[in-house]
Length: 62
Image (cartoon, rainbow, N blue to C red; front, side, top):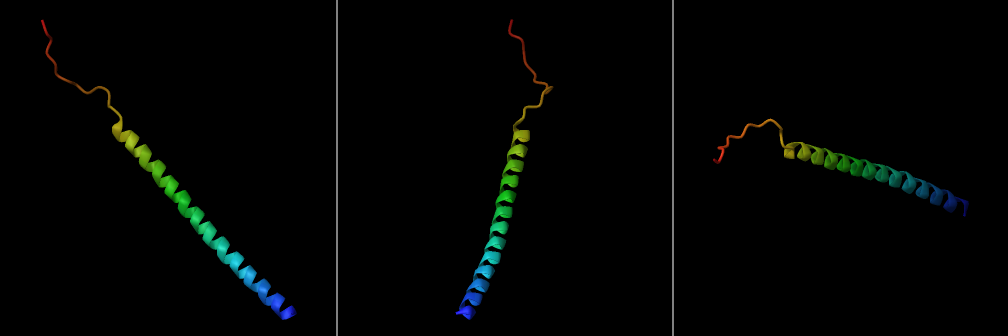
């Protein structure tokens, strides 16, 4: 019985460590994805900005 409890404890510990590793890897990937989306949105906002001071020819109507 003691042998079974020790083996069960080791198995639970291994699953705990492996699960926490995958959780941290998933959280890091999700954070990186969010960072890339923010960076992409910022670059698109810069591209869509109208630059002031552009000269446009026009003719006056009399």
